[in-house]
Image (cartoon, rainbow, N blue to C red; front, side):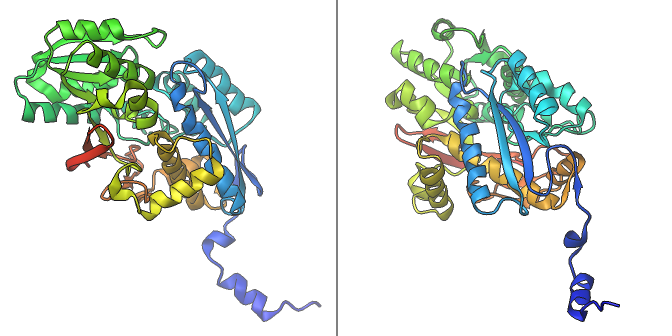
Length: 398
């Protein structure tokens, strides 16, 4: 009879539960690989966001070079949907049914994510950390396989409304919004924040994603007599709106939604001098702010960019966003251990208690539970000074 060494028996006896746990896999995962799917607008009217998908791909390359996650390499499969919902549906079906990814991560855009919302939950495939702040992603009761990540649009809209009511209670407000769920979600939060003062809005105008410009809309808002402007636009149209308002001599108090605050992708094309005084929100450190010049987390991000994404724009907030959200899913997968089932991925994503990336602002953390699928719920107001965004006021939200 072969004797088992005592040391081996002791090693088994004292092994951690995670080591002893039976490996469990759903399609898209095995002992060697975790397959993650994504759609991004690498072309089309929202192509400025394409750098987010490229950053995430670069992040996983770095992770793989470092040995992967719990010993498994990440296979990142990202398709161009052109910010077109029918194309999103086509690409997502391919990811789920042909590529058989474990889950989707950071699929970008409210219209596209809306188009696949029911499908993903019917298939019970996680629609994880979607790249849109629509409020509906926080609905675990009805959509248990969909989770947001960034602060939601309605909360952000209410924060702008509160700032206006406090600082200019007699404001005449003009609103430009994208005519879809993304734009309407922001607008609802803004109106909710104004409450019984909603009549302060003197003009609302919308645009379609397929429109070539929003120049005529800006002229309409100026002619309304508005002295305050809430600009609910994606990067291409945000740059147009900022530039056109300046060029026609309209100088309202200008609130710009957080999704278009990139200096490199939005403000530089608009003209930095034309963006002076813009107000928005943030929850991430600003790599252009002197305060973070020698910050270890920003230095680490810069080193990552130079090695893994050298073509990326160091002036843009989008690569910093992509890097930070990738760190979040990295943490979720580390927590998942050897149970790489779709249900456990959702379970771990809904068990983030006070976790934070060091690229987030101090005081902002991720908190989720089984009844709360909104990871980040705090922001701080920022104002553009012609060179950089400057924070002011207190952290707002939860």
